[in-house]
Image 1 (cartoon, rainbow, N blue to C red):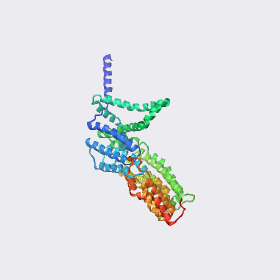
Image 2: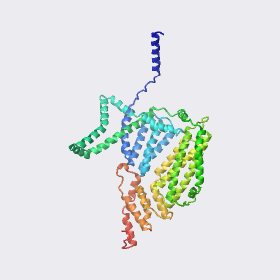
Image 3: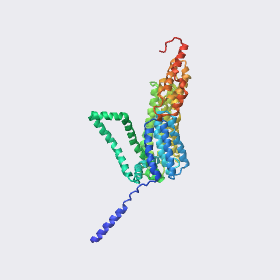
Image 4: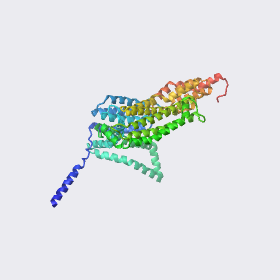
Length: 535
């Protein structure tokens, strides 16, 4: 072979290899509206830190989420995105939960909704842009793409859009780089200030004066901005990536292929692995029949207090439910399908495991109701009951799915979760705890009422304790008067961001109870003149 032929073949090989190299992805381009959106995203990133992350839940958080949703709707509309009927229904749900911070004074509920609402917004924006009108069976893929893949896959587009705007002006790029350099220098500057302050008393005193008058507020602001910038990048990445569909859609074919890759285990192997657990559950329930059935007959087993009886049932439930959910998830995710369908054996074992869990849930709920019937409601007891009911609904959905293949499990669980969250959010758990306990006590359903426990609830719950002011037991009436007066006179929200309607309405409508203690002692004085039994 001649040298010329060899060189020709090498050149051809190089050309073919170069042809195999995929072209670099095109650089993102930005319209004028998208550049404006990038700048506004910085404000929303800071707003999220200021109004949500500071945990002053109230009107501030509601305003933020409502404003961002309005902002997102305008951006999507201007981008030519159309809305389906299902998207509008979901939008209404998001608006309702966004208002929950203004309508609820429950710290736990507000914290959960501060996680739930952003996730709902991310999924809604993704579903609108990708033409998803209802919850699909492959919700897992849609959710992970909306919350993680799209925003983080376009995380830098906000900075790119802002820099693109800066490049259009004369020295815009240099100004942008200077600002970014100053932001990067902030942490190092703070460290150096701390070290120099430790080494020189004069320098320390100068900066102490600065910090007292201005510095601390500036530091807080700078830290909040530094946290808000990546949040802004996330928000703009979500909007830009969804509109331009930079991430591949989770089509049915894509989901099926991804699912098929992990389905590597034989159904015989999986069913055999779960069989000993099922046998163990049967033995367990047979041995514990008297113990479990006592809950349904409202009798307490020997050696147990009501608290121990109910608490032990809950922890048993949690452990068994987690084990069963894991077993079901493994079987459903990794079992090989036959002709595109889950094997009958896997479906049968799924139903059996779910049925065992439902039986334990029913028993635990019965024990909890017995506990509540004897001692009244507390926040922990009510939350525990709520969680057990939610678990029961999940396992019912799993059974339906195993029996009816066309049933959309993801949609069923999502609807159940949203309904249960709505009950938790708008059900006024704090007020209903006081109302039930007062009713149960006055009607002889419980022997004693623990008013000290009411202090753990929100202040507006005290409105339901007013009937206790006329209680025949003066100790109860006194404690109720003190509790109501303390609730009415308690300092209002420390920050305007924490303003909420229930607390405001309570304080405005119950001002006459601010001196409830004095009224109580006047009542005692009339009943027992010159008595010193309450000192």
